[in-house]
Length: 445
Image (cartoon, rainbow, N blue to C red; front, top):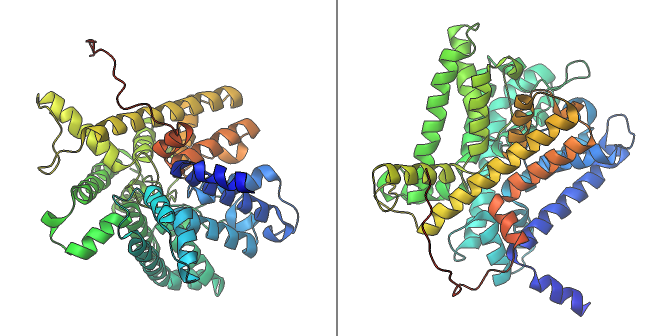
């Protein structure tokens, strides 16, 4: 017993985070396998249960079973709990339960929370956790209240559950929905594409969850005094605005030309918001042009903000790389963002993350394309959706075999825990900082 405790203590913070995620995923899969979780009251195959549990905990939204028509209310409740746990973070949810029980949060636990959310410091981490829980409940309840009349009008009392489920799923950037039926599965929000009381709150919830809790904490502290925000908050807000407007203009002029002006504007805006790791859709994605799919893939890989419910390599990563490229083009010694310069290791980490995400996204697409004999561009769309924890699909996921599903599970897991977390967990020991080798020039470009 003492040896076990000693081994646990020797685990790095990043290894503990990975173990927490894996434990929750397998526990969720166990619950989803039970007959009570399916409407047919039969056991669900482990492959379907583990895929659904991983997708929920990793707030992705890729499914192999239609959520509304296959899972019972108990199964849907399990999925919703997994989404909430994955969206806020396994460690954060565990901490909130400890706080409710009156337990004191030790320093080691505070450090674990700090790393799981990428917080800048340990100080004030418990207060931040309380803010995260409180803000999440406010957003989710407000979103459900706005959507409630529309869903109750269509589904009666069942509309209450659907409104709350979709509100939580949207804020957590999960993309799970309860709109499917036995005849029409995987329909997402296509039936509500013209209903602003559903589409608008879903978009706002996705954005609210995607800009991150540190940004909201900055807004709470400094109100609308943008100059007082931290550099990270400024970068997140400006990058998010650019990634919402530029692709929307592109979608408006090059896609959905057969729709009316009003529907075209709504479709363009929604399909720009949802690839930022949310996974809902109001239009048939299979009708997108090749360039349109490429835009979706780029948005899915970039994702949302650090410390948010969104996945992807993060907007800050992309912004740092763009700023660094700008500094090279202008022959400056370092990148500048809002009259501040990020620390040199940040640029290195951003380049590492880009390499990591591109490598696993492309490799996964190659393998699935070979195994399933499916065009590569379609496979890359699915793998980008998985590694970006988005959930958008061209309809391939339910038809994939075991090997391809395992690849998507791995990608969803890597996308949620974060590339650096996985790398640091795998390589827990750092090399001697004093160890230096001779320098030598190498030509690039």
